[in-house]
Image 1 (tube, rainbow, N blue to C red):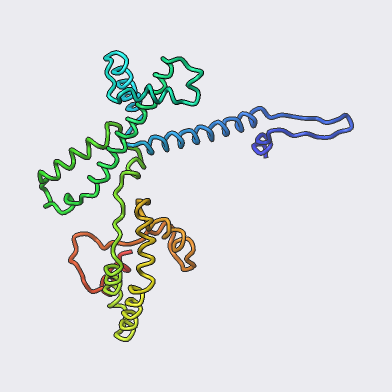
Image 2 (cartoon, rainbow, N blue to C red; image 1 turned 60 degrees about the vertical axis):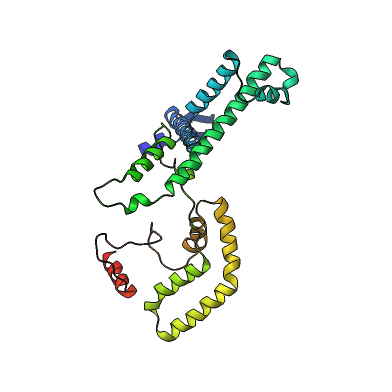
Length: 281
């Protein structure tokens, strides 16, 4: 009770003598520290979001590029942009209130920032192409081929000098490939065949053919449009329409799939694989 009494920030009592107001300075101090801690966490999340959004670029790289560009234009008297920063500074909305030198400085900062954005977008695109190569996964165990060595060096170069954070590579991940409707239907029929009898499988084949000729191409077109601007066209729709809206029972923190133990013989019987997975997990 004593701790609960101290936790009250203020309390007042009404008596015949008037209103007695008592303030707890320790409680007010804790409220202030809690608000300060909350704003610090918001600032850290904002800073991490900015650092992750510009990866593999960095604010240090921005200052370096802008400084080198401005120094070369001012002291070497060589402008690789053909006086673009002068034109940009002259066409600013507030250019009439600035001198010619200030217009050049502001225009140079804007052009240097644009050059930095182009550099880190090029590095991000190159890193996405490099991460799309999966040849290192099929190399013989214990050996590192020369192609893998070159790939590692290029990934290190285009990853930048700054140590990546947790979600730094999120925007550099390759896009999820979109399979054709026919391949998807064939894989589904192949996986569902051991779980159906002949009559059910023939009925499912008919439904699959109707889907391939009717609704399938339209849905495939929607997925293709989404795959152009989204790195993963599955995760958000899966989470919203299947994971969250599904009424069936599912374990907490469950994943989309389960994998059999490594270094075991491959089993092509789907029913046997389900038994092994059920026993393992």
